[in-house]
Image (cartoon, rainbow, N blue to C red):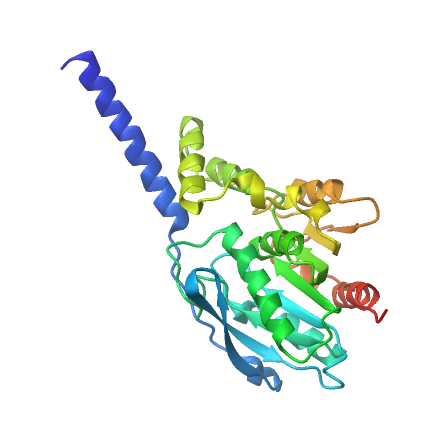
Length: 289
């Protein structure tokens, strides 16, 4: 076997390996919700609204109990591989505080349309679509906020930079940059470092948009919105340094940073005072002018 043949076989093997890992990272089976707000005794309307590529998103619209036309509106955004059912705990606590609420499934999640693949970029575009849908309802257009969990928080940050109607954003365990999070996953799954660049490049090509374009760390300061960045200090999925990066990238006075000791990626809402602080942030940032 010649040297050139050996090199060709090695190259093919590397490409196949990177293809395998890329497909594995994108393996995502949409799971539909098991429960609805009815379980909480909360009335809701099932809705569908358009997003990019002629796709549609499924959601729950929950009007405020009092003066829905004047109440602030919050868009609730789940994380990777989850669905809007993940936001039932948020609905339970926020609905009695007199917000209009819109929870929805991002593309390739839950009951929303598939669209080749899911990505942080598409999460952001879907949050923008959800904002535009909210504006089509009879609400106060100057009082719209977003709560995003994990990649949902990252997408919400990008959405705030491209959708000026978003005035306030709460992120919980959100990445600052997609490459940081993927490299952390590579290490956890013992993927050889020499494959990282190829995998990252393949994923970027699949998304069709440069990471730097939608990375939250590059977009938070572009947004007119105010931010409350919440991060568990024991988070091993999205490291706490990601929350610190987000806070450091914000404009002076734009961001409140709340690192929560002893909390991980999915349990920050169990912290004492969590709901009160979230409510205070939104009521302050979305108060009537």
